[in-house]
Image (tube, rainbow, N blue to C red; front, side):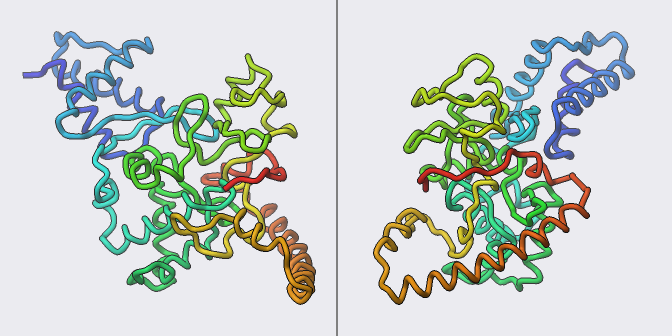
Length: 338
């Protein structure tokens, strides 16, 4: 016998098979499930509505039915465009259960190693280069049983399955899917390493930071835009803020915060940050100074060539599927941060 509760059953089947959904797609699935139930029995008292409150009530009923299973149909706003996304989340954080159906133990170990380097990236850049990601095959305490060729293919699989994002610059960062489905693992493992939005209190890996030294204000782009419409100053230190995220006066969080040399050494929890390294180098010897001047001169030449190549590659590549980072504001000189 068909019942109104069958809508929830059909909806859950559809959601479990799709991973991350936009809010629009989730609502379309909800509507289709209602139509399927009504087609089986027109007398069933269930109907579709565009009312946000009715949608919220439906999501609440879904989560009540999942409560005993340690699952939750959870939403998050995309860090770049602010659009709401939904995914089925396993609230257990022990063994990255969300990945277990797609990858074996070795592959999950490698994924965790890459995620750690992203989280611990210097200067709040929350991203790693391709070379740094491949370095994790042999850089950890225990060597991962993968060749670099296999690791490169695996990185492509992580991107294809929306576990990671890869920008045109070849840098890997956390995707909305990872931030949604792996949130318990990330929060419990990297409690002291993640940063939260001052407005929505969710994790920030792409956004803006206040320019004043030692100010802790961090925001997603969409949170900044909402906040700035009503408030002209930083909520933490009261520094006057620019009107737009692209104006001078704000610092980037994410890939645009990367500085030359940030990928040069592997990061581990509790290791000295870039600022400590800089302090140790305050009083170099004459020989060290001369050597560094030579290195900087050579690096400047290489940088000039690198920028030319990067410019040519970006002009040829028009595919914007996972290239959202290109739409972000230009990077600025950062204050002293981790």
